[in-house]
Length: 281
Image (cartoon, rainbow, N blue to C red; front, side, top):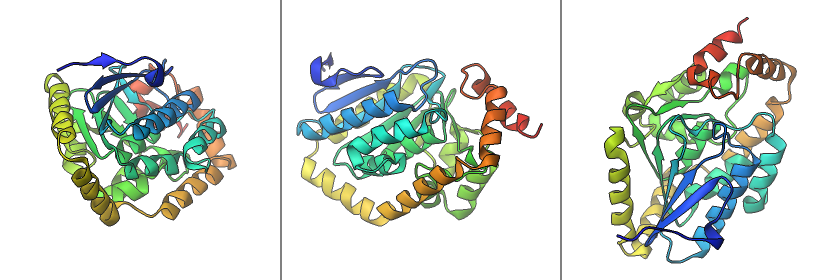
């Protein structure tokens, strides 16, 4: 096995790429807490474009260089900026359409999750074809309801299809953190594995898929998407509602209150329930 870091085309500010044959391993590191802001969205767009243009690339594995955060959530202070970066791939300033594009890509995408993955971060991993998480550290949430919003990146579309109506409503309305074990039981992820086994499992799976004839892999993915992937207009509607709701007075009041209680700070978001509970006061 030969793993190399390729200069030039695979050089980004917030993502480090290693290539092992037909598999790309993309490690996300956007200090201080892997917020999904314009820099990370810009790099994701470039990575997807370049990987799709390289016929030798078949499988793309996303992982984090931060043990506590995979992708924490979107940067709520820079929404117009990251949406404009998404438009460079989809033509529309919408993170939801970027994520749907990823789901429909010819690339097979796998999220190897350690640490927290909430809201926009959760929606990013949901857009990947498969999700595997560390039992000890992975934490999942969709907290938009606590701010009076709908998720803007496609969570309603993905979770309802993965979990069914009742569990999707529980996740989306509770705004609570879910462990990797419970996320596996609910269908949020494929499997929860011990952290010391996670990387080897994902690598073996990625390399196994990459060795099969690409036409067959693509045909299977296309047919599964035809059955399970919501239409583009449904993603666009969620994105538009998010954009409208984030500007209303109650939502802005709650975002400001959450910032006062430590939203978008590394230490405070380790115990996110304290921020949500603080909105009541």
